[in-house]
Image (cartoon, rainbow, N blue to C red):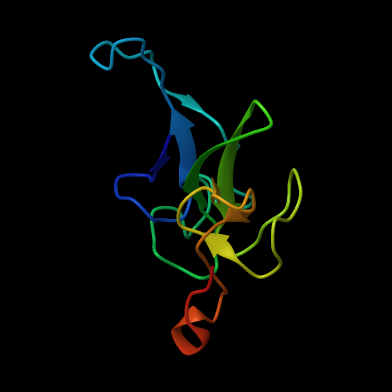
Length: 119
């Protein structure tokens, strides 16, 4: 799973893709996990730019929970789909179960430069 920007990572129009392998040598063709970001496709004036006026999908990793493989991705600075794990937060890595049985995940709010990162 990876963020696949148009030409360069983190540009407007970016999607999240994946590929599979049984031996880590031979890989399947890549496929998109996410749709084209809203109003941010090749026809958008902001496509391929680093602009607050367009959108990009960002890969956040795979999470196995209760035997189900869940692909985590964020749409720029907004989140929804299967449900919100925590409001106003984007994770950098999938959640991890700690010895107490609880789930832990690093996360940052949109204004993390002022508020910092939390777990």
